[in-house]
Image (cartoon, rainbow, N blue to C red; front, side, top):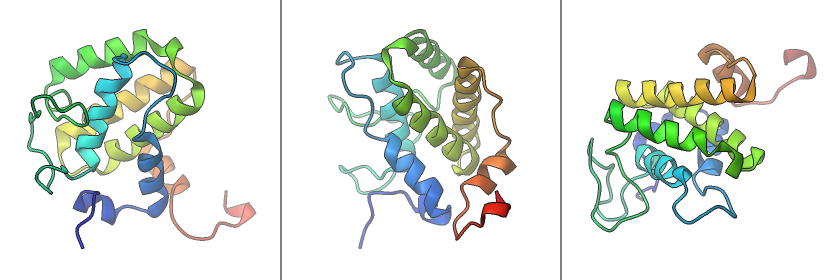
Length: 157
């Protein structure tokens, strides 16, 4: 049975998969074409198979008239940097709950995505988001440990 999730997603902990899935919908109550839309379209393209083709989108791919997913921003460092500037300049439009889900999804993709450039761009998104919140970003090892699968004991945390 095919999956909406790309193959690499099946190889990461369920907790990390869940964090990513929770961020895919986006924020409620923002303007129709807020800068968050471009970021979310990129996130969807990085973790989901294309409904049109049944496989992941190619690097730099964008479908004409399709506002659901796109790979062009995340695969072009200059375009990605502008998308981040636009997003973070409009940060006050988004509620903190949405933003927390999004930066945690960015960290999970920034650790696990098979493409080095995509990983790096999402990790940058995560660390910049932490700095906007005035919190210290987790290391990749800390994040992976916290979102590991399995039963946790109180003293284990």
